Image (cartoon, rainbow, N blue to C red):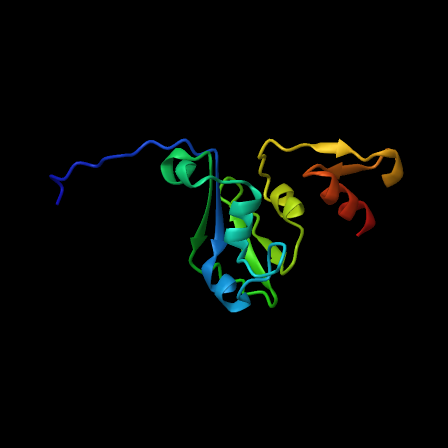
Amino acid sequence: MADKDFKSAKTQWRDVVLVCRKCSKKLDGGFGPDGDLTLKKALRKYLRLKKGKSGRKGELVVTGADCFDVCPKGAVVAVNAAQPKKLLIVPAGADLFEVKTRLGLDDGRRLKAAGPNQGGGELAPFFGPQAVSERSHG
Protein backbone atom coordinates (compact mmCIF):
# COMPACT_ATOMS: atom_id res chain seq x y z
CA MET A 1 0.00 0.00 0.00
CA ALA A 2 2.84 2.42 0.73
CA ASP A 3 3.89 2.16 -2.93
CA LYS A 4 0.78 4.04 -4.09
CA ASP A 5 1.32 7.65 -5.08
CA PHE A 6 -0.97 10.33 -3.78
CA LYS A 7 -2.48 12.59 -6.42
CA SER A 8 -4.29 15.88 -6.18
CA ALA A 9 -6.77 17.72 -8.35
CA LYS A 10 -6.89 21.49 -8.72
CA THR A 11 -10.08 23.43 -8.13
CA GLN A 12 -11.16 27.03 -8.56
CA TRP A 13 -13.13 27.00 -5.30
CA ARG A 14 -13.11 30.04 -3.05
CA ASP A 15 -16.08 28.91 -0.93
CA VAL A 16 -17.58 25.52 -0.10
CA VAL A 17 -20.96 25.36 1.64
CA LEU A 18 -22.01 22.13 3.30
CA VAL A 19 -25.73 21.53 3.87
CA CYS A 20 -26.94 18.72 6.13
CA ARG A 21 -28.63 16.03 4.03
CA LYS A 22 -30.53 14.59 7.01
CA CYS A 23 -32.09 17.97 7.94
CA SER A 24 -32.95 18.58 4.29
CA LYS A 25 -34.65 15.21 3.99
CA LYS A 26 -36.65 15.70 7.21
CA LEU A 27 -37.79 19.18 6.15
CA ASP A 28 -38.71 18.07 2.60
CA GLY A 29 -38.31 21.47 0.93
CA GLY A 30 -39.18 24.70 2.67
CA PHE A 31 -37.01 27.04 0.59
CA GLY A 32 -37.25 28.97 -2.66
CA PRO A 33 -40.12 31.07 -4.02
CA ASP A 34 -42.68 28.26 -3.71
CA GLY A 35 -41.15 26.58 -0.67
CA ASP A 36 -40.65 23.37 -2.61
CA LEU A 37 -36.83 23.34 -2.84
CA THR A 38 -34.22 22.03 -0.44
CA LEU A 39 -31.82 24.62 0.96
CA LYS A 40 -29.05 23.19 -1.21
CA LYS A 41 -31.07 23.56 -4.43
CA ALA A 42 -32.50 26.96 -3.46
CA LEU A 43 -29.02 28.34 -2.66
CA ARG A 44 -27.60 26.98 -5.91
CA LYS A 45 -30.41 28.62 -7.86
CA TYR A 46 -30.24 31.89 -5.90
CA LEU A 47 -26.46 32.12 -6.30
CA ARG A 48 -26.87 31.40 -10.01
CA LEU A 49 -24.47 28.49 -10.02
CA LYS A 50 -24.33 27.35 -13.60
CA LYS A 51 -24.29 23.66 -14.51
CA GLY A 52 -21.10 24.01 -16.58
CA LYS A 53 -19.29 25.87 -13.80
CA SER A 54 -20.03 23.36 -11.08
CA GLY A 55 -17.76 20.78 -9.56
CA ARG A 56 -14.05 21.57 -9.65
CA LYS A 57 -14.46 24.40 -12.16
CA GLY A 58 -16.87 26.53 -10.13
CA GLU A 59 -15.79 29.20 -7.65
CA LEU A 60 -18.56 28.34 -5.21
CA VAL A 61 -19.81 24.88 -4.32
CA VAL A 62 -22.97 24.04 -2.39
CA THR A 63 -23.07 20.36 -1.55
CA GLY A 64 -24.72 17.95 0.83
CA ALA A 65 -22.94 16.61 3.92
CA ASP A 66 -23.57 14.01 6.57
CA CYS A 67 -25.37 14.98 9.75
CA PHE A 68 -23.78 17.65 11.96
CA ASP A 69 -25.64 16.23 15.03
CA VAL A 70 -27.49 19.47 15.71
CA CYS A 71 -30.86 18.33 14.32
CA PRO A 72 -33.01 21.48 14.67
CA LYS A 73 -36.78 21.26 14.22
CA GLY A 74 -38.10 23.06 11.14
CA ALA A 75 -34.62 24.10 10.02
CA VAL A 76 -31.51 22.95 8.16
CA VAL A 77 -27.88 23.18 9.29
CA ALA A 78 -25.37 24.71 6.86
CA VAL A 79 -21.75 25.78 7.19
CA ASN A 80 -19.20 27.63 5.09
CA ALA A 81 -16.14 25.36 5.17
CA ALA A 82 -13.97 28.48 5.57
CA GLN A 83 -15.72 29.11 8.93
CA PRO A 84 -16.09 25.59 10.39
CA LYS A 85 -16.70 26.77 13.96
CA LYS A 86 -19.91 28.55 12.97
CA LEU A 87 -22.79 26.22 12.08
CA LEU A 88 -25.77 28.16 10.73
CA ILE A 89 -29.25 26.90 11.63
CA VAL A 90 -31.46 28.06 8.75
CA PRO A 91 -35.21 28.07 9.46
CA ALA A 92 -37.56 26.97 6.68
CA GLY A 93 -38.56 29.89 4.47
CA ALA A 94 -35.52 31.99 5.42
CA ASP A 95 -34.55 34.85 3.10
CA LEU A 96 -31.76 33.53 0.87
CA PHE A 97 -30.00 36.91 0.80
CA GLU A 98 -29.70 36.70 4.59
CA VAL A 99 -28.53 33.07 4.39
CA LYS A 100 -25.87 34.08 1.86
CA THR A 101 -24.73 36.96 4.06
CA ARG A 102 -24.63 34.91 7.26
CA LEU A 103 -22.59 32.22 5.50
CA GLY A 104 -20.11 34.91 4.45
CA LEU A 105 -20.61 34.36 0.72
CA ASP A 106 -20.00 36.99 -1.93
CA ASP A 107 -21.70 36.33 -5.25
CA GLY A 108 -21.01 39.79 -6.66
CA ARG A 109 -24.42 41.25 -5.84
CA ARG A 110 -24.33 44.36 -3.70
CA LEU A 111 -26.79 46.27 -1.59
CA LYS A 112 -28.48 49.14 -3.38
CA ALA A 113 -30.02 52.18 -1.74
CA ALA A 114 -33.81 51.95 -1.85
CA GLY A 115 -35.67 54.53 -3.90
CA PRO A 116 -37.55 57.48 -2.39
CA ASN A 117 -40.81 55.52 -2.16
CA GLN A 118 -39.06 52.76 -0.18
CA GLY A 119 -37.96 54.78 2.81
CA GLY A 120 -35.10 56.88 1.49
CA GLY A 121 -31.70 55.93 2.86
CA GLU A 122 -32.47 52.34 3.79
CA LEU A 123 -30.43 49.68 2.00
CA ALA A 124 -32.10 46.82 0.20
CA PRO A 125 -30.63 43.94 -1.81
CA PHE A 126 -31.02 44.47 -5.53
CA PHE A 127 -32.40 41.53 -7.47
CA GLY A 128 -34.77 43.59 -9.58
CA PRO A 129 -37.55 46.09 -8.87
CA GLN A 130 -40.03 43.52 -7.56
CA ALA A 131 -37.59 42.13 -4.97
CA VAL A 132 -36.72 45.59 -3.67
CA SER A 133 -40.41 46.41 -3.37
CA GLU A 134 -41.20 43.13 -1.58
CA ARG A 135 -38.23 43.54 0.78
CA SER A 136 -39.25 47.02 1.87
CA HIS A 137 -42.88 46.03 2.51
CA GLY A 138 -42.30 42.67 4.12
